[in-house]
Length: 146
Image (cartoon, rainbow, N blue to C red; front, top):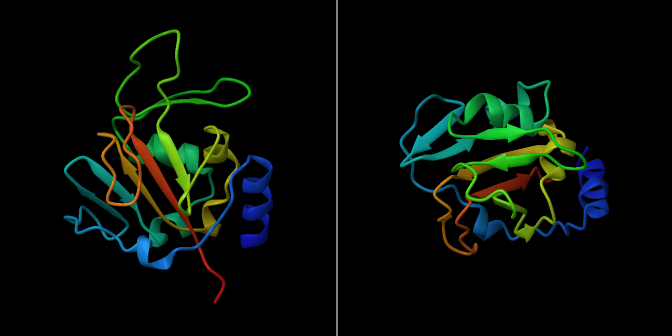
């Protein structure tokens, strides 16, 4: 399964690199065993991801109340904090295993069963090692082969 994620991500211009030390989950208040939230940050754990039969984009729609998604072609518009302007993109920065994705298409193309964890920062201030974004940040961590 991880191979299919890597090929899809590669086609989107995303290089998947594992830097395991950077993948520690931040301290959070647990809202449920599957979804953790604290200070507006939502973390979709492996437990919730493995129970899904929908795309990551649909899961974000269902689990992140502030998210607004408009299905456009070729890639959806994703707003974590609302649209700031009509003329420029207000999409969040998306990182897959530490590498910045070129667009939001990756959210609709990734198989959630291949993911370890997804962290969503609507305020745009992710934990250390990632660049902030005024439109929010989504960190995606791919499962490693055992």
